[in-house]
Image 1 (cartoon, rainbow, N blue to C red):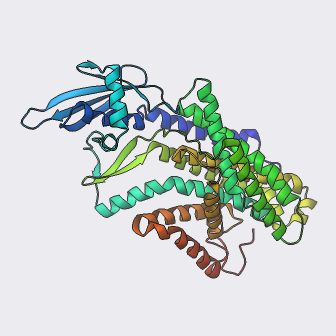
Image 2: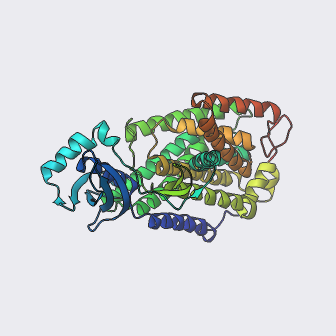
Image 3: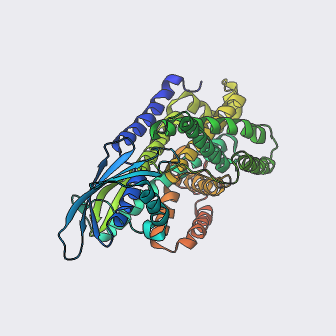
Length: 451
């Protein structure tokens, strides 16, 4: 009943890195830099109608070339180009700094470039002056309602992965001990801070490429989440052995506040953001002028969540750790008679749950850019709801609950008043607790499903 060996663990980890590598190789153009380069075109062509034809990599490092048409009233259409060069790339905070612009008439002078950035790009007119990307002619035409539904579905996929991994963390601990750790939202915030710290170290060493930074962030987030949760969870769950669960539950609230204040002091109250990467859009379909888009980073985060979910299901069903976990959860005394070390198993479970929470924090940074010291609370609370709805104590149920809660939030935000979304989610939890307290994969009885 030993935990899985390193030979079993390297395969899903290697697959995660391969998926991130493919995502990085698939996008050679930075969407944020492309938007900035498009936005300077109206300033270079006053009173002209701009139609962007194509955007390709420029001749110099960290540069883009935009080919476009400029049409004036009572004048023929003129084909022009602009080459924009930036200070950095990838995860560097300076990658949006425009340092040079060249056109078919030659490079802009330093004074002209300064005035363009200072009095146009930083103005509301400059922000609204983006003429958009190249025209899309090869997308599939679909009905408008279907196009809107697909766009919302794609937009909600990363959120379902984040909720699913956090819900698994709750279920792993509750299934083994019957107790809930309310600090998993803060463990996710620890994972987010570790991701940014690892990426910042690589940037300081001269590597700002997205793939190494996010790969290092993934490892750092999982390691930090595992260590913090194993240590903190052992004291607030493993050391408190009262018959009632209330002292342990209150202790986890204290752990949550401790981690929150720790993050506030370590990283300051100001949230540190990573710049967006792999945000170029794939045009999947269209309905008239409405385009159904999917970004590379959304695909990458959703795929990482899916691979992690599949690995967890395999781990719980086919590994020695999973057999030991299920045996101890079913009957701790009988499992001890067969050689299961309860203390060691608890630490391993806490470390695995913390690693999943840390991974969810990394996905939050990759998808949304950052997470404040107190931002994990809402994620943790909604993931707990997902675990309860799916069937707390069940790993597949937690994953299903995360998927359900993520899609519920996305659908409500798309079709109903968004200000009532959270209230509707909490009301749905009440309905589940009344009609099916065991969750989707549990029983209809008055108690949660037996593990």
